[in-house]
Image (tube, rainbow, N blue to C red; front, side, top):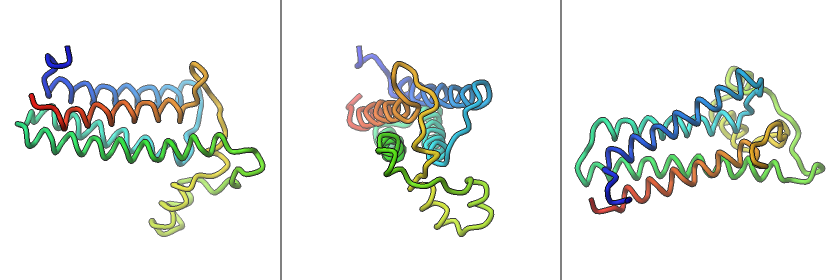
Length: 164
């Protein structure tokens, strides 16, 4: 079955997964009322970037070398996003006395701090990131996102290494 999937179809599938993830994030934010923390926003950027690269790959429909480059880019973005999601999951599983203090909002940091310092603070996470407000099948949103990034990375690596 896997051999019948064309590279273009796989890339469209990766882009569709990213689109679905962002629609779900939109639903949770605007319909359920869950405000994303800085780590959530960072994960969204990785999902969007990976989805855009996958869509470009599907539209471009390159030959072997180009398909590998696109697959590698998608894999790198998925692994980067997975690292941020793993950090988020780790923060959520810390004992309450070890959770970092809550920091300023992302908007405030972007307006007042140098970008490098803002990026460092965002990737560290804070007390807001350690809270679990919603679960599905017993998994928090960062745990679900980590699974998504693992799936995206596996598919992207497979796409990079496959022969057809």
